Image (cartoon, rainbow, N blue to C red):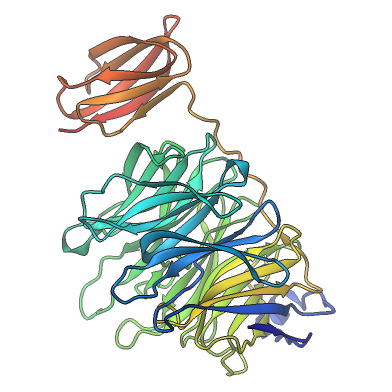
Length: 505
């Protein structure tokens, strides 16, 4: 069903904005709900919801999310292409059998899109897999990444690399349900080129990733703070780790703005927003207590380019509200998507947009009401190519049933959405590439021009040397002991590239 709403909407100007920075510019209109749509499925008790979305080059909205119509069958992914004006379904396609966890849609060449998500594994609960889908909704390629060897993987994010490959960020699950943050680099077909463990300890895990304005990658997640009784709830804190395109650490910080009160970013919900000044905004969940009943409070954190915390804000109400995505407006202010809980009026609306200025002062609250479905959980906030309209996606009844939800919001008198300048992503590592890494009996080395490859052990001795031609070459390592080696590419008598190679037995 389609629900059209008139131009009513109202805004509450917070006292903090008036006292700290004066009244914001007066805009003639507040954002308004233009159209929304409910997408039921054949078995009302089994859910559908939209976890991710993007605007295609043709201007339509491609959405993806898990669906289960049979209690005896696993979830499967569902793709829908929606009209940006009416939200009518233009086509739909069934994807992988998968876990109901996070997923990402990553734009690719030729208007194709790569879906990255957690699929049901044969020997472990969840592993990672990809599917490439054409503009017409045809599945072009399906590939599963090699098993993690743990109890499974949870996907945090996936990014397109400059050479068309993918960078996967997430976590593996091991003994005693402990987590290890992980970064995996694949080509476009899902072949693993290298993988790295990331983080300070086994309780770190990664929930999102984004390119910085210098081409490095920022990983966001959480860590467990040391604590002792009587503190009963795990005091999670936010962890930010900047790495190079090869996964080497640049800098990292742990943020605990509320002391031992938990602050947590969650898979699929909290997304990094790159800003024009090189910094980032990150929504998070906060806890209002150290012990007892847990009440979620929406938080917003801002860090600068050096990952220094500039400000953080907790919305004044605490019962059941959550921030998810955010967008930046042309005047430097931010719009943050919120669902659940009462607003400043004490009335619980379906969802909200909260507007903050660049210093973190709450300026306005814009509530939205829908009769399309109950117990709405909004997840995705996305600006259209013009920056004048917002797409909102989520689910009704969350993961417990109902269906999916989508809406288009007109920003009306507000400034347009702007995006940070395209990051100076690093050029492809064309000189020397090694995979798999770690390697076992043999490795593959790819070079742009013929030369000589040398392997050096930990004390700098050359333990293997062979000539290589331009392109792909096999590197015989079966006789070398396990360990970490330096792989040098020598051309015209000088070392032109060095990579690390780990040999595992």
